[in-house]
Image 1 (cartoon, rainbow, N blue to C red):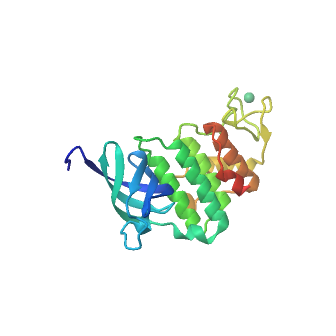
Image 2: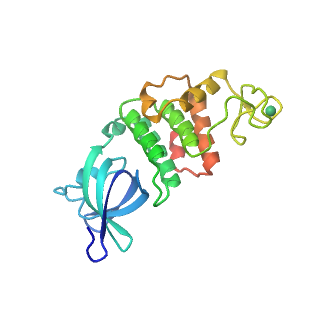
Image 3: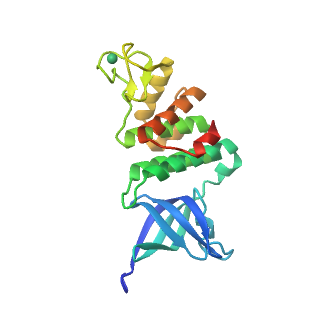
Length: 239
Ligand SMILES: [Zn+2]
């Protein structure tokens, strides 16, 4: 498929960010399941008649085709799989989706596929779009993300000394701790819920039942921020 140094590629992607460019174009920041972060130009996609129109908005999940020329990606086709339209019906779903996208944007690297994170993000957007409680989705996403990225929270022993844990969590130590170490006292169900989430596949978010509250939602986001050293602009909006 190469002519004059051009290559082509096809991949399932989620649109993480868009910026208008020239009269009818957009620059897209994409999370490709197979290739990680891709910045691509979608020419003419803002025209009413463009076949790319419906697939080039933030949150859209579509099968994108590209030509690659001099390391630049140009969208040639996009087949929409899900626009997660329901996100736009509820402010708290929308704001949470923005937080999840911002987290993904900061973690996904160019040329590095991350199918597990892709599946988790798609599952979380699907749940939010279908009216699942936004705190529940945020909590589930956060703990699965930590696990996927090699920072699985410890829940069965003191992360510092290995003794039986108390109902105490330490974000800096990466999980439960005993009474001897710095941590925050939490209701026992927090630890049960984290365990439950860790043993549930991402795709089963909607059917996973666990107990939670607002404080656990805030704690889960703080955990992600600390673990990945993230400054999240959108997180200010969901307080
Ligand atoms: Zn200990």
